[in-house]
Length: 207
Length: 94
Image (cartoon, rainbow over all chains, first blue to last red; front, side, top):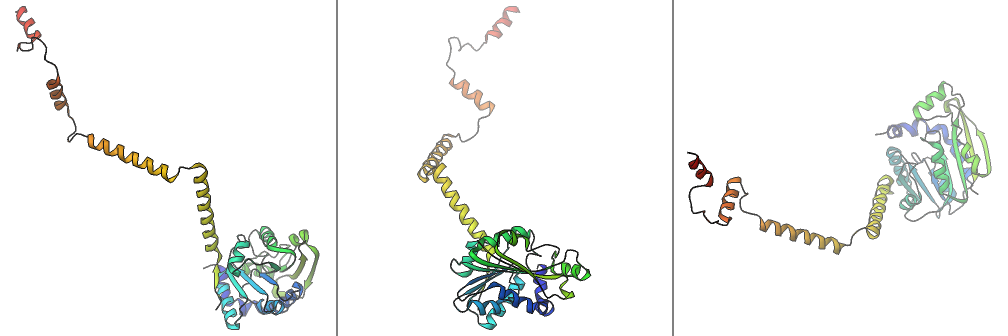
């Protein structure tokens, strides 16, 4: 069992309450339209699904991928409890995700209209190549939203976040998006000491 | 209830399929046909059977080789004389 499988047991109760407003900001920044397909990676326990589904409607879809089976089992339970029929889940290594995998999960080859990377890039190993891979799956004209915590010099709280989330919040996770996206924007979100740093939201459109 | 697809397994399956496809392509481009392989196998079996059939019951030892050579050797004039030339020389000397 990996760390995130263990983490999944107390993630929703301990960490997620800190991100309720942040998730709402991310959904708004995605500028979702009915019929859109969103790739949510890492989807964790599926905390973003409700907001994403509200944007894409019945004709749209959410593909939720994560590297942790523990996180996904909770996401699956959430989907079942809400009887969502247009959420598709898969356990995958971010460095291996490709169009064929998305087709396998979705049941047919999907067009990825929106890319939602919430607190992923600070924790992924080789995060820049992970971003490149995900960016490659987004359709031209599609929008990407990255939300992550950042502290150039983490405080004690920041070091605790790094420890618990196996993260490196020193990373400037918006950098690769800024280098390749059109209509790039970045802003800071309201943050608490418990976040360990500043919450940053970056968005951009694929040329 | 929605199911969680294990994409690690999917990736491995696709990889195996791709490798098998590549192996088929390689065999088509560089390999022998099934008929060639079967023909060669039949020839190999035939040769093996021929060799097995020609084998002696018991392996030859030195005594049996000598015995065989003695039996097969053509008889020369004077061979009836039980005395060998060496023995004759000995007699002259004495």
